[in-house]
Amino acid sequence: MAAEIISGTELARTIRAEVKKGVEELEKAVGEPPGLATILVGDNPASQSYVKMKQRAAQEVGMYSRQIDLEVDVTEDELLGWIEGLNADPAVHGILVQLPLPDHIHKPRILEAVHPAKDVDGFHPINVGRLNVGHPEVLVPCTPLGIAELLVRSGVETRGQHAVVIGRSNIVGKPMSALLLGLGRGGNATVTVTHLLTRNLAEHTRMADILIVAAGHPHLVTAGMVKPGAVVIDVGVNRVEDSTRERGYRITGDVDFEAVREVASAITPVPGGVGPMTIAMLLSNTLKAARALGVPVA
Ligand code: NAD
Image (cartoon, rainbow, N blue to C red):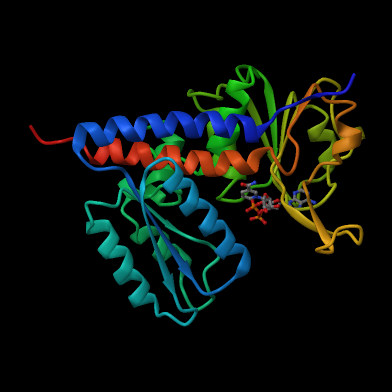
């Protein structure tokens, strides 16, 4: 029997509606909406389109939004100056520096400059540490947070299950494994993390009750690599040539969707799976940051 399709698009819509309600309530309580600022360096078309989507999503839920566009040759000190300004701006509760940054900018220095309480991408080492120790005042990276939410709200039990993660990036793989291993929502699993140097990848993936694939490699996961009945979450976003499309390419995930859906019990599509959840969780993180920062002083 073909797997159930887990729709991130639908769930993201629900979460955005919940965030919108939270924004209205917070604005009523403190007199101002949560604010999200995005910084874009250079003119990478993909980054421009991501930032535009994030800004539009913030506006749609009633947040104040601010976009800062900087030239590709902006100096590191200038960029740090902008971040300092936003750290001090009371109308801004969430700051996102769109990645990738140009090579002349030292990424860790920039990520560490964002105030941890406004770090809605969850990349500051304080938030990374808090995620790993299970601290409640943490901002968790949006993509893994969205996946945990997808699993919980789709009724997928993670407790005691064997979760296998493909990929060990700071953006997806590592925080995903920390969430699965932790005690919170979507946690309490037994976790295996695999990567490019893992030997016999299929031996690991075939043991997974829940398989999270974040490699950036189209069709990496085939049906033979999946245990019958497993839940498969495809994080990959890959452009593959497609002459039947006007634009000459299509977007595909890391999983051979058509074949794997015949083996799995549930699977996320690409597009329409993890992607929409990432933006929904950015809004959710911004609301969380505003709630924590915006409590009026009695
Ligand atoms: P990354 O390149 O930083 O990391 C990829 C990881 O996968 C690495 O740890 C690497 O060791 C591992 N890997 C690569 N090829 C492998 C293979 N053949 N076998 C086993 N492991 C392999 O990428 P990332 O930022 O973690 O993103 C991963 C994918 O997820 C990309 O396609 C990216 O576009 C996508 N992504 C999607 C969203 C979303 O919102 N939908 C968000 C972030 C990333």
